Each structure stands twice: as structure tokens, then as C-alpha cells.
Length: 379
Image 1 (cartoon, rainbow, N blue to C red):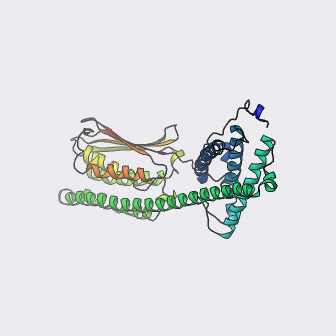
Image 2 (tube, one colour):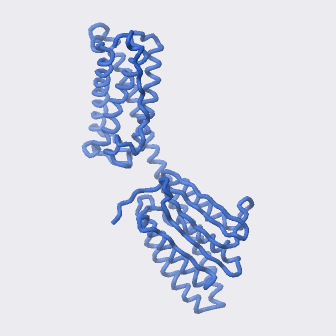
């Protein structure tokens, strides 16, 4: 494009892709967020490269021409080496969620992607400016190969950094899973010790109730043992499983507390298959009973609910009508264990989340857990 008319052109720069963009729906769902993030990084660096080349003496092209070359080459190389690499993961022998590999087949594909992407992007830039970059092969071969080698070096640098980032994320995920398993082992004895202490007291005062409580405990431990053999990080533990274990636990507590304890479990059918970490809600229910309902003479009620809040978040609520607490002061002795562990587990989950506590003395307490909503297939 001639210099005189180039100044009148308006170049619209690409916007960062969203993970739910229609342009990414042909990719595996577990890869879309990473692809969108890497595209944003590539486009940001492409802008810096164009500004650097234009401002460092390459006056044969206008700013908009430098931008076209930089974005066209960068986008073409990114498309072939990132979404293209993921789309061909079966051929390249890679697995999600990152789809990287160190095989010779992968190395050859990435190198070919850089070469082909540079060629396609250069053709786009040449078509925009009306000049042929390939003329440099005869006019100034050193300059041409300098451009090509710099592009190759930048591209390989990007690919290596993306690979290292994915590797670090995998290591972090493995560490997080091990940490969650450790937290689960801390929660299990905590609940069991409390129950055995209550059972010991009942044996002396009310042997028939103690026997019923022991039967409930046996049922609960059987269900817990089955659940412990599932891996919460794989999504095999669902809200239906979690609510079933809560029902066993509440029935166990109902034997001990009698009419002083009532409860409701509200789990919509559409959310039953939603994955959650094992034992996520139980420490909150245990806190509600031990520090909310038990100190109250006439006991109270616990309501446990799951819902889709309509903003892409799963909302889990544990509401009790117990003695409450002053959220601005120190929590009752022992009550901080369950809440702090739940907060730590939620913070360690992929995608994060948050835990909110609201309570007033004499008016019960409400704990709300906000987690990213996961679309799950219905049976």
C-alpha cells in the first residue's frame, strides 16, 4: 500500500479471545482457557515487536504496515503451533489438558508450524503493502535470513516458555492434589474422634441409643471407606455422593441429639452429578452442630442447599439456627478448624473459589461456598 494512502487507513487490532468464544469451540474444553491466554500474550508481544521495528529505523513501512506484518506472522505461527497442535493431539500422541510432548514428531511439527506460519504471515503483509519481502533474498540475503532467524528464535522462545509454564502447572496440580488428600486425612480423624467421645458418654447414660448410634456409625464408616477409594480431583466424587454422606452423618447425630436436631438437604437433580472434593461440607455441618446447636437448650435446625446462582458459579450453603457467633471476634474454641480447612481446600481447587461466613450472636450462622460451575452430562 503506498505511503500516501497508508496514513488514511485505520487498523483494527485483534481483541483477546474468550475461552467460550465460537472460534475455540472446536478445541477440547480443557484446553480453551490456556489457548485464549496464550493468544493474548502473543498479540501483546506482536504489538511491541511492531512498535520496536517501526521505531528503530525501518522506515520503508508505515506503522500500520509494521503492525500487519507482526500480527499476521505471529497469529499464523500461533495458530499452527498452539490450536493446531491441540487439534492434532491424537496424531502427535499428546494428552490434555496441555497437549505438549517432547517426541521427534512433535518437534518436527512445531518447526514446520513456525516455517509455514512465517511464510503465510509474510504473504499477508506483502499483500497489504504491495511489496515482496522475498525480493530480499536477491537484494540482501543476510538481512532476509536475519529476519527469518529472529522470527524462529522468538517463536521457539515462546514455545519453550509455554511448555515450561504447562509443566509447572502440572507439578502444581499434583502438589495440590496431594495437599487435598492430606487435608482429607486430617478431617476424617477429627470427625471420628468427636463421634467416639459422644458415643462413650451415651454408653453410660443411654445404652439403647448408644447401640443405634453405633449402627449409624458403622453405616457411615462403610460409606466413607468407599468414598475414600475415589479420587476427588478426577470428578468422580459428586454432590450426590457428598449429600449422601451428609445424610448418614446427620442421621448419626440425630440418634444422639434426638428431637433437638432437625435438618433438610436440598440438592436439585440437575446438580447431582456436579463434581466436588470429598468431605467439603461435612466439617461445616459438624461445626454447626457442635458450636451452634448443641449449646442451645432446644437445639435447632440445619439446612444444606446446593444451587446454580446464575452467574456461572455453584453455590453451596450450610445454614443453622444455633447460637451464632460474633464474626468480628475470635471463633469458639475448635470451630476454626473445619472452616479454615474448607477455605484452604477451596483456595487450592482449580479455578479457585471463595468461602463466606455470616453470623450474629443468637441468630445462627450461614456459610456459603462459591465454586466455578461445571457443566456435567445428564444421565
